[in-house]
Length: 235
Image 1 (cartoon, rainbow, N blue to C red):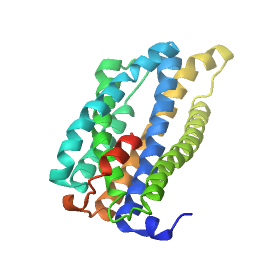
Image 2 (cartoon, helix red, strand yellow; image 1 turned 90 degrees about the vertical axis):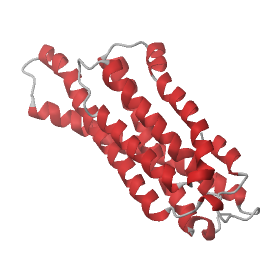
Image 3 (cartoon, rainbow, N blue to C red; image 1 turned 180 degrees about the vertical axis):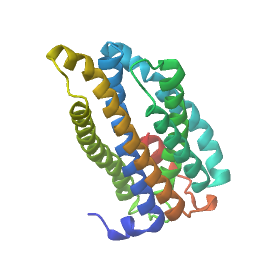
């Protein structure tokens, strides 16, 4: 059902691995920002949902530009800068604290990440079809989407564990003298956990950057003309 030639190809395997790593970091970013919005900033679930709109809008707007640039520049020329922006955006999130401004810190971080990841999703989805015969196109597309879902599942589990460990470590280093003091320390412990989790998310994006730089060597002429539908489905 899964021919090894599909996953062992340099460009295809690199695209799958990039999607897995990006999915791991991205899903975790959504999880911990949701915690931050609701637990620390006191947003309602509806307000937290609206707070993510800049990320979605950034992806949509940037995707149109990336789709135009891909046939001219090729995939790696877009993926490497895109992943660099994703790393920068995630590192910005490591600076959040209890008094951080959404517009001064979270908003620009999400915009930078969204624009950068638009430069990753479409080229990676297109590269996943390079050299693939019509009989393997469905398998390649399915593996790409599966890679992102598996990455999201593993990343959420891994970073949630790291987050819990960081929160516990914070309490160990700052033991409360009373239950009331514990309630005061809890938001700060969560902030510390978010910062650690976002640092690991940035590391996942950085590994994806290395993978893209090393494995993706497809040229713009190699991108199949029917790659756009796959890219849309990946988004």
